[in-house]
Length: 116
Image (cartoon, rainbow, N blue to C red):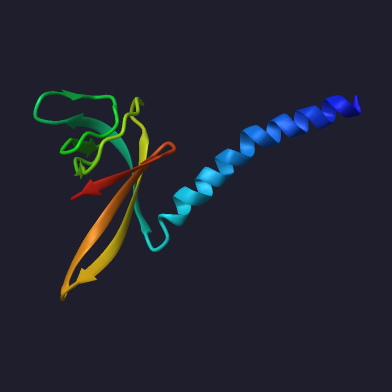
């Protein structure tokens, strides 16, 4: 029984620890950002098509939320989810006397670069 328990713990550790390591790396990239909103994704559209299920980001794709606000994808990433919650993070950046906001959108375990 002890051997079974040790094997279970070893397998569980090997499966779970990389997940926590990835989470720590992802969160490390978000130091300095502030959670500014939690929204439900309603639909998306781009030049070619649109849909009411979230299918990830493609550069230039517009993501529309239930409150009719939107963000535009600045990168590519595939994910298929129906009406997911998106956590919006922002960080103010000042360069040469001008300020702008860097925006990230977290959906599930994916982080997307976005534009307003």
